[in-house]
Image (cartoon, rainbow, N blue to C red; front, side, top):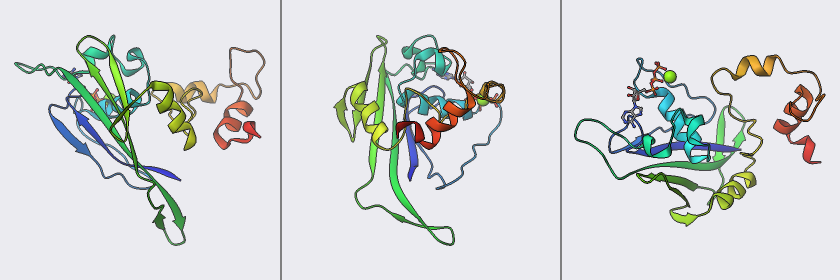
Amino acid sequence: RLIILNVEVDNFKSYFGKASIGPFHKSFTSIIGPNGSGKSNLIDALLFVFGFRAAKIRSSKVANLIHKSRGREPESCTVTIYFQRIIDLPNQTYKVVDNSKFTISRTAYRNNSSSYAINGRAASKTEVEARLKLVDIDIEHNRFLILQGEVEQIAMMKPVRTNKSETGMVEYLEDIIGSNRL
Ligand code: ATP
Ligand code: MG
């Protein structure tokens, strides 16, 4: 099973300079804090690395994701996610899979361009998507993130797909458990 160890943000949205957020718990992490303290910005940081378009990250362009405050206008912002594979063992214990640690990063620049890296080496968006698919994160179908307002949409799904433009509950669940690939 894949876990996120921590997330490193550098000049991303409300985070000025570098900050490491984590370590996350292997099963459940909850982020708490006052209004405007950066909880949603941390989720946005994950969406940014997963290649979501700026609009999904509550921003009109990627350049707006770069931290901006009085007198501070860095040239770029970067988010790095640290992943690792673990094997669950009895009694809430687990074993780390040897050499399974890897990172994915994305950087956005003032000119609205952005670039990706895998383990610190430049990579294309396609390579990032393929790397994540290897560990069962399917960005294209995105069944692993439930964003604000989407709970209702899931609850309202028809049992099975009736036309091409909508997903039925059966297809949704089969995407999650992976049986549609068999
Ligand atoms: P709530 O409890 O209201 O949902 P939250 O903890 O989720 O709050 P966020 O939405 O993560 O809060 O953070 C919002 C803050 O991030 C705002 O104060 C906003 O000004 C700041 N912010 C967003 N983009 C930038 C940026 N590019 N530079 C500096 N600050 C930014
Ligand atoms: Mg919020």
